[in-house]
View 1: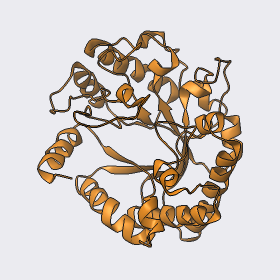
View 2 (view 1 turned 90 degrees about the vertical axis):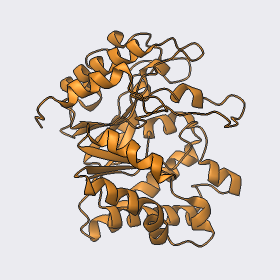
View 3 (view 1 turned 135 degrees about the vertical axis):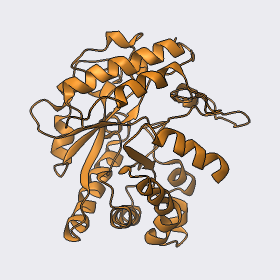
View 4 (view 1 turned 180 degrees about the vertical axis):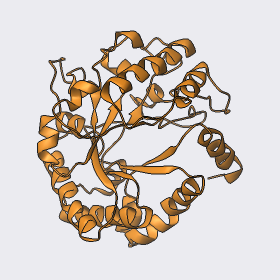
Length: 314
């Protein structure tokens, strides 16, 4: 990474945040080539976490163990290596790397699996079952070491509402996720409503987040998501529509008594010169930033700043 770009970029958003999030996959190739989990975390995550903490930011971390752009598939690195999370050796590496993250970074909240319900709906059952085993097995060493992180998994909101299931469907909730991951002390939410067929932010039910955690006392953290500022394919949008989403999301957060919300991609992604495989859905996620790829603020940033200025009431 170019520090002359990265440091100013972090400093700009850190002025309007009280926490930072890292969303990362285990470095499968390095681990399989003999790099120790502790060394991998020391090299990649520790410097970034230290920089965040030096700015007084709380730290949240989500582990992404499959393909973030295609939940029907396993992590691209594993696929390229011909390996799978169903392999007990891969599960062991996951547990060791997760423990290294918990031990060295000590995030305030630590998500062990991302979008569990979407993986369950889209991926082979053997993959989902392997993730259940992996995550639950990772908890014991963390607890035995007395590490302080509050543990969570994230669920995909549109899937919970039945809007990303094949052929559409009724509300599903997250009861199965709470059963499969009984260790959770919080619930992470991932929400991209435009992928679920919502044309305008105001059409989102006020209970869009709160219904998911009804019957629990678990803290709610929105750990990824957003609304694009441009039209992409059949998704029609604009900078003004994106700003309206931030305003509507605030109402959803209030109704759910959410603990935090993260803008995982604070800046747009410039894919100039980046070859994409046929059918890639990455363009659907490149303009979710509150500022563009040149760090110029969008209208949505003013709405974010308005919300950030509110007194925090846990």
